[in-house]
Every structure is written in structure tokens, then in C-alpha cells.
Length: 83
View 1: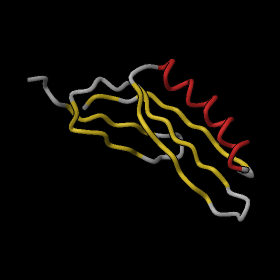
View 2 (view 1 turned 120 degrees about the horizontal axis):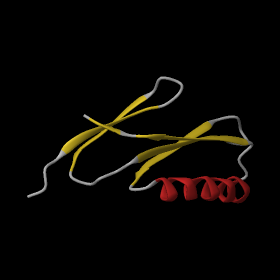
View 3 (view 1 turned 180 degrees about the vertical axis):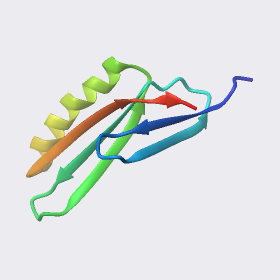
View 4 (view 1 turned 180 degrees about the horizontal axis):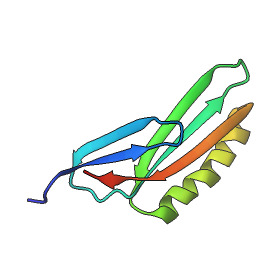
């Protein structure tokens, strides 16, 4: 049975996300904070197994902004640390 571990992602604004316990080797955490037309915000997040996969989420965010009519959005991506 694979060993499970805890992963931690710390974003530039100080937000700390804990992932796990998991046996999956996630490498990056991403977050999109979208400002909607009515001024409200929505947050989308996830974790990926590679930098390339996380980078593709940025392209998906651009597409989602156009499709959903977001007024603005911020895409953030950080490397996770195994505890």
C-alpha cells in the first residue's frame, strides 16, 4: 500500500491550503478568483501532478472568463510542499 502524506500550498497572500492525506504525487496547487459582473466573487481551485498541467489551467481560465463573462480574474499557482 502506498504511503500517504500531507501536502501544503502557501499562496502569496498568505492563504495556506492543506491537501491530504494522499498517496498521489501532486506538485502544484492553483486558484482562480473570479469577479463576476454583479461584483460577487467565485473561487475555483485544484491541484495537479505537474507544472505543465497547472500551466494549462491558466489557458482554461482565460477561456472561462470569456465564456462566463467574468469582469476580472486572478490566476495563482504555487508548488506544494510535502510535510
